[in-house]
Length: 278
Image (cartoon, rainbow, N blue to C red; front, side, top):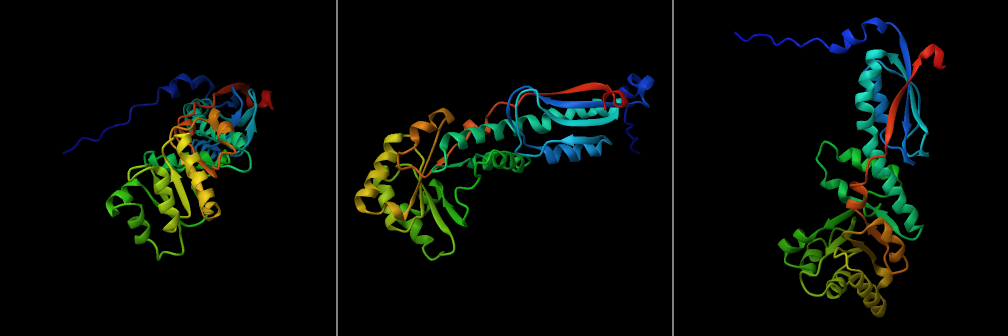
């Protein structure tokens, strides 16, 4: 017969016994400027603890250091439990959103910033990272239209650029996006083959500026430039975006520089009893 495992008592009940019936107010405060992400999930988590959310900035809000993100009230144990989850729910997504917006601002209106690296995250957090990217006003898809992304492994298994695009030629309801890495010859030749075979977006995924420049110039020389969008990726840093503008690039796919952004520093500070703080 299995013994029933008893949950040990929560030591916080003993610690806060003398103030257990009092209601306290706390504020979540940023320690650096940035963009907020994770507000909806935070509100749900706090309410599950029985904490009252008096004020909460929405996703995408821009804040300066010292800004109050949220004001909450609850009993001492509830506030202590809230402190354990607030930073975890908001700090990392807000850091991603902040980096995404920095990239968007650096790019300006003529260069689309995409962060497709959310797909490489563990399944449990993919949606969190994707939402954070969107909070920073970057795109998480290379196109807003339905599309097929034909990556290097599709190309390898199907036998090359031409064979891959031939395999999807009749799928007219979707844009064709193909990844080029120079595996089947110079990237310029791969690009010309891709455009000739119906690609709508070519992803020059080498990280070498000379490659994407050569592709742009070759397409201009052929008179094909308006038939395709050029995306560029691999190891692009946000600080380098200004140097990439005006180079014939339509889309920048930035992964690590956004996904691995540092936390947006924040803290939870108890103001005192709610009646005295209001």
